[in-house]
Image 1 (cartoon, rainbow, N blue to C red):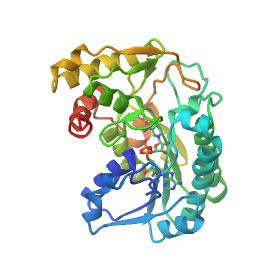
Image 2 (image 1 turned 90 degrees about the vertical axis):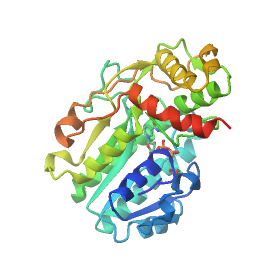
Image 3 (image 1 turned 60 degrees about the vertical axis):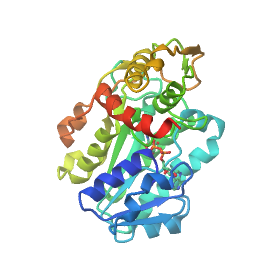
Image 4 (image 1 turned 135 degrees about the vertical axis):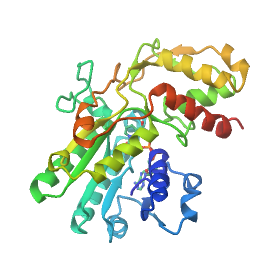
Length: 318
Ligand SMILES: NC(=O)c1ccc[n+]([C@@H]2O[C@H](COP(=O)([O-])OP(=O)(O)OC[C@H]3O[C@@H](n4cnc5c(N)ncnc54)[C@H](O)[C@@H]3O)[C@@H](O)[C@H]2O)c1
């Protein structure tokens, strides 16, 4: 796996080790943290390679003797890619291509990778279906689309099996609240815990299909396990399939955190201008993943928040 020290990757590592798999992680710790791999490094079935996916040699080392690749490494965040498009492109496109080619050459059975809902770009459909996408609105979105095109092409030209998973706004334990590129849920949680008013970009009416990380872990497992020919060499939306506005998210998160500290109930948000490159609404159809992978997400946004706040409270309060 690549990106195993990150938020999603480390949740995936722990699940795979619990099931008795051998796991090799390649990560350069640019946004990942050793802390996320604390229990993994104590497991004899775990191996860590510190290195960059832009380094072909490291990619070859990471895929040697491996059955499946779960490629999670990327530079996430739309604003980061607008600030520094070359680095995001180098990692997300050049690094991605290195991993696909190394995996193919090493005889890996299947390459499963993290794409993103950002590929829907300016598509105006109220519910996003895999076959209809718009123009990308940021270098990050363009890089994720480039990944899909490269993977689908490698499948077609060389018969190498790939599966792309378009994650929709994933959240859960270990997602960092720190830095200018933090995702909305841990950022809001951290500020609320410290009685600070989070800024809602826009009027709170933008909506997202917030997806608890355990659903994403399960989708990766299913993408590896499927034996149906028509289920591979394609892309899937991975989400819960429900819309939550940022205003509703804020209210739900505040209510959950107020169970730990009643004073949080009084913290009001501030409102700012919408961010460049942001899609107003993002809601997934998960029909294809249901039908072809047997994906049935277990946790809706409310269940996920309920679980995630335990981690936020324990880890962000100091
Ligand atoms: N979190 C989300 O909501 C979301 C949504 C859509 C897609 N994704 C995708 O899911 C994947 C995982 O995202 P995440 O939220 O866990 O992010 P993250 O930043 O927590 O994890 C990314 C991991 O990749 C590693 N990495 C980055 N550049 C690397 C490089 N050049 N070489 C080796 N390792 C490198 C980082 O150190 C980190 O451990 C990414 O591909 C991201 O684009 C995430």
